[in-house]
Each structure stands twice: as C-alpha cells, then as structure tokens.
Image 1: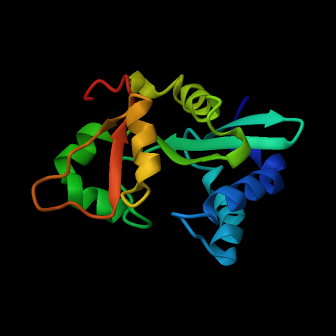
Image 2: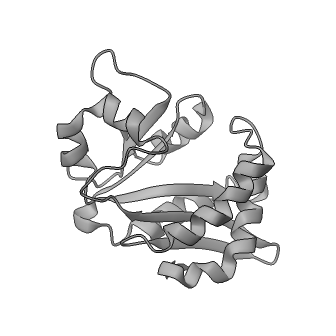
Image 3: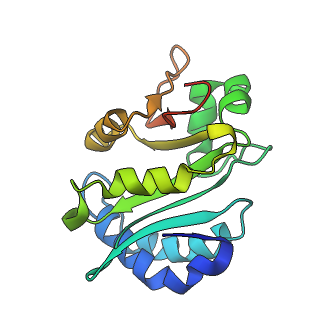
Amino acid sequence: MICYGPAVLDLTDELADTYGEVFSAPPWNEDEETIRQFAVRLQADSRRAGFRTAFAQSPLGVDGFATAWLTPRTFPTDRAYGQVAAQLGRPRVRELLVGALEIDELAVRPHARGHGTGRALLAEITADAPDDRAWLLTARVATDTVATYHRLGWHEVKPLPGTENGVVVFLAPNHPSA
C-alpha cells in the first residue's frame, strides 16, 4: 500500500516500531534517541516535495516500509549528503540525483525478510519515479544490504577516484543513467 504526504502520520507509531526493530540491530546499532528521532523526522519529511510511503502489513502489523521524496534542486548538505557529493562530484549529483526520487528509508522486519517484501516495497515506491529516476544510499559496512541491492538489480555508482567513503549510492534498475 502507498500513501502520499502527511497521510502517513497516522502510522507513525507502527513505522517507528518497525524502524526500531530493524535499525537497532547490527550493522546499524542505532540507539534509542536516534530511533525516537525517526518519528520526529517523519513529521518534517512528510511535507517534502513528492513524499510517499509504501508499507506492507500482515496480521502481525507493519512488516516493512519505505519512504521517499524528490531530491531538491539545491542538494542538501546535512545527514550523509556531504559524503554523497564528495564521492560523486557536483556535476554527477546534478545529473543523477537532483529531481530524482530519493528512497530515504527501507526497513523490513526480520520475520518478513526473504519473502520479497523489500523488493515489493522498492517496486511500489519507485513505480512513478520521474523518468524512472530513483536512487538510494546505504552504509558501506552494511555488506548484506549492499549485496541485496545488487541482487535486486540496483546499480552502484562508482565513486570518483580517491573519494570512497562510508556510503554507497545506488541507482534504480531502470534509471536512464544506470
């Protein structure tokens, strides 16, 4: 199921529970405060241009979710954006990422993994990406996650020589520059 904009706020508690279960575990090891901040971030993120959330539910509750929005023309510098810009350089950031659908979070509870939940969430959230342009990043230390994106057909953007850092940038399988 997909919802747009602030409509997702009705699910804040369920999404925060899912986020906490997924990201408190290795390799993320996020602390309680970082997990609590997800719910706060969701409030602000839901007002971003093109914001949407895809989520999967079962009798157990929310099994997984993905959030995304359109990357603004002025590329942000907070969070991991500086690392992305350092690896790709400003011209490639503009070409590949600006105006594209940016997948911010993908979280699938352990009991729902291995059943196509993540694949379905990514397909649903990127279905109407502008000109099939979608991207995401993950931590380089999350080797299982990196391998999963490769297996799902996402294309790793190679860093400029000498710029590799803690993030890996992926373009969607149908991204025209992939």
